[in-house]
Structure formats: C-alpha cells, structure tokens
Length: 137
Image (cartoon, rainbow, N blue to C red; front, side):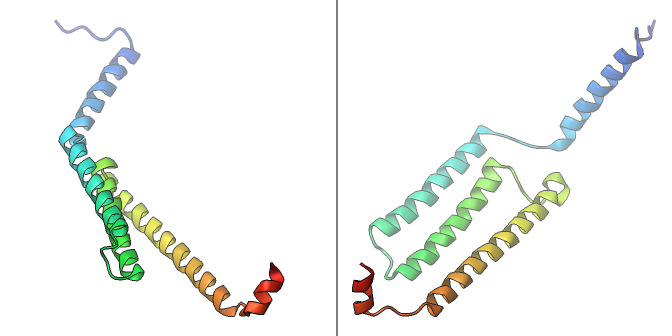
C-alpha cells in the first residue's frame, strides 16, 4: 500500500533529489587522477624545456628564443585549460569557448596596444648624446 508523503515539502525534496541525481548522470564531467597526472607531467615538461633553452642558450638569437618561449607558453595555457580547468568547446554549451575567445581578443588588443605605444614613444624620444647623458648624472 502506497502512503502519500507527510507534507508537500517532503514530496518536493524527494523530487528535487531525483532531478539532481538525473542531472549528475547527464553532465558527463570526468575528473580523474590520471587526467591530473597527465596535466601535471605536461606542465612540468613545458616548463623545463624553455628553462633549459634559455639557460643553455641553445637557440641562436634572443628573438628566436622569445618566439619559442611564447609558443611553449601558449601550449601550457591550453594544457592548464584542458587538464585542470576542464574547459573545452562542448562544456557549458559553448559559453566557455566564447568567454575564452573574448579574453584572447582583449589580451591581444592590450599587448599590441602596449607594444605600439612603447615603440612610438621610444622612436619619438629625443636622442641623448654622451654629453647630455653626463649632464643628467
């Protein structure tokens, strides 16, 4: 014989628990120790290689070294986003991807603007002769 719940609150609490339980199965978010370990190892490798490149002066010029370091930094950012933050194009219905793209655009504008202003300020500064440099000291 089926007895009705003692109150409407008990019924809604049971319904919410069942709904929450169903929602957990549909999310398909997997946090595993293996994933974290892979991310950690990749992060260590992506830090150690650039460190070695700089300390051993493996690359021929500072410009090439800088470009390679930026490449390693971008890859490391992607590793952190995938393995530690669990962000991808499918999570949160694509909103995470949209926010990441917006952030990347803002960072590019900020960096490009900063470099542009610094370059033009350097180009437009009056050159200082050795005599003028002695006068400043």
